[in-house]
Length: 339
Image (cartoon, rainbow, N blue to C red):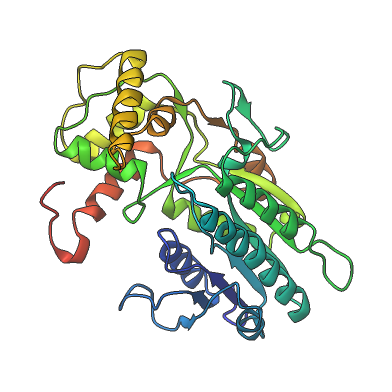
């Protein structure tokens, strides 16, 4: 791929951004980034042009879009557990308004493709069904609702010739050494022998390793089958929670927990504890929402993306977690004491 093709990546300093930047750089593209924050020194390879700015500022977005061939839109306000009215407006401003700014600027600049990083959260509860691109979205959080609105903005985009410009990639849960949230907490809890599974662990999850995410986006960006389409993107399998815990423990070099706790008594206890702590004016470290997230079943079919785009994941669950934990242990060039 010629370096004359220029890629703009928004939100590039986020958890997945550096991997995506590296993937495009390695594929031979000229990379430009737009992020709220300056990237830490050495976070990406030489030659990447860094622009600091806000996607909600239309003038900034128009300026950075000049001369770009494709834009990878990752910038977003991510899921939050506790949402105030002020946060609601922020979700709309960033996830919907910011996406509109990016799309409008891209169309004006004659960009050839707009790829939106989206999420399986737009589907809402699966009801135990396998989710495909034909499944009806039923988002049950503000994050998911605004991401679904952003998807429509991207899919409605068209060039001067009337041809669609947008591609939406609904990623399964992404894991890797920079990822924050539930899987990071689970990894540290397992590393410190502070985790006891709840339930039988047979509920399904769908994941993808961050380096496969980078490869997937590179492969889709100019693919003719991607224009005007949305795809689920996964590592190709459904994994039980037990299998995920086993893969993490294998990467840690320890045995999986042998005991487990029953779901309903623990759920009742968490709700009681959460209510009491809230009454006292504090925020509970464990919530009913966390319990629901832990026990939910999410099986996402990513075969359409593999068939149409030709994507094949390089990492299975065990290999992905092994590499993730090796990298987590080498943050800043030193071993983390709790891993």
